[in-house]
Length: 515
Image 1 (spheres, rainbow, N blue to C red):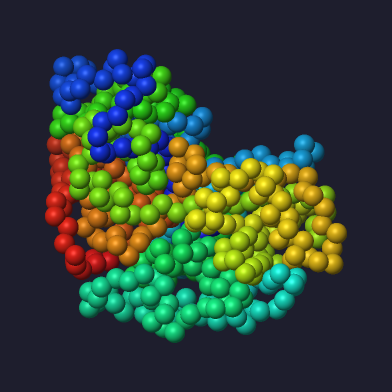
Image 2 (cartoon, helix red, strand yellow):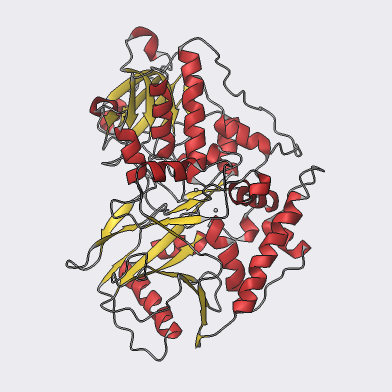
């Protein structure tokens, strides 16, 4: 979907977590670990609230606190800037460098008339972000192993099939019918792609959006995830997609928003969390350099992928109901592969599809050297997702470049395609600060799991795009969750209304969806 293509992937924080048996911690940290979960009763906290992660959820949670007069908080961020998975990079030959987006890139859904507005869209307007309309349906050129081949009719059929897919999935909600995989859902409406042209067209409508295959994804949640963002008849914002081409980086909108209310003393950058101790009386966070921070409350905005790994130690280990919820959801990986050439030789449309005999092999291409985008940049990029992303992360840059160039030369057999002057792709899955791009909802992830994923443990709260029922995987999901968590903690601090979500200790096989 928070796709780095169409999702931005809300993308929040950086570190990861373990839940089972305690494990050794770095020597510089071990001296700080007391084994007790009640350390804060005997010392003054460093802050009322620690916000772990400086992505969208973390920054907006901080803003919610500040708006209600709670300013005694610290954002703890592992990187050297705020923004989370809104991550840009300088790219290109020395004399042709420009800013490209490695992570979140799109504003999915904007606003139709006086209807609900996507808050990311509102931030983009407020901070004058430079965006361009992304024509994902009609600005398309198609290729296969033989070069340019017109199968736009097959592509259009795939777009129509996905609309049928969402309608069929939505029809299961009122009767509380059991969820299925998206592959089963496609099969129920008679969609069983077999040819490379059919397969890549389906890939574009599904994998490119959700960063997982239909076999790995929920039939029902995939449909509502789209409808709540794009379908105005279902409460969505609009059908529009805006691509950020702002040379300050897409992250600028959240950094500019943060600059309006944050003081430097409220931000701790280049601070990686090693251990989180939590109890009913407070939270203690130990950084990799041995620094120990204490607070009355903490908000953990680590990405789902980070929570599914074991780079951070929770003391005590997370309870079984929380661990089950974390492991039951899926973290998708969405990888953009950038190339720069001296001259443009490719398609004039915004997008291109390449149909290979292997599903997911460098299938989606986008040109930035186009009017309104980054003309004259000489930049084109391909996207891979899911297991294919993990595959290429295990390869060297040179190996990946060789494969990508093989595909480009197949797409343009009558062109002498040169080697690129610059080549770049991020390794989201391998990076311990991310462990993927954005969350996706598998068929086995039930509503109670989402409740437990979101539920706090003692004074340790959890927030981020993965916790959003309607907008998981999207930047605006991270926004809404950060805002809601901040408001809830304000109520607890001020003694007004403090009603944290209670976990469900025994999850049953069936339970009705509530969206």
